[in-house]
Length: 140
Image (tube, rainbow, N blue to C red; front, side, top):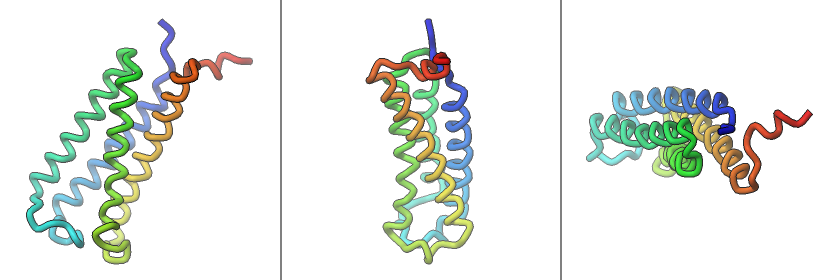
């Protein structure tokens, strides 16, 4: 079976997972300092949310690895969209209300999630149009 090259996708997923972990750890440990977040949120809840969303990404990556691309890429699109949700920090409080470290962790996670979503979208478009991700590298 001819499978597309997954190196770029898996590299982007690794970067996103680390950026997401850094943001969620910072969020959990400094939860009271993040402006506009509900008082009912707990550090444990933040960590649990990270685990839940990362499981979605892990299952998606495993499915792509096992050549179940459609469902795997769809799960990875959901995983990436969950990372974009960190922009919600700026819905409840302006960027100026956040510390530079808060903004850094938020924007790193969002940027990495956006890159994953772009690659997933590219791969899905290739599946829809019948082109494999490796087709362009074969044309000389």
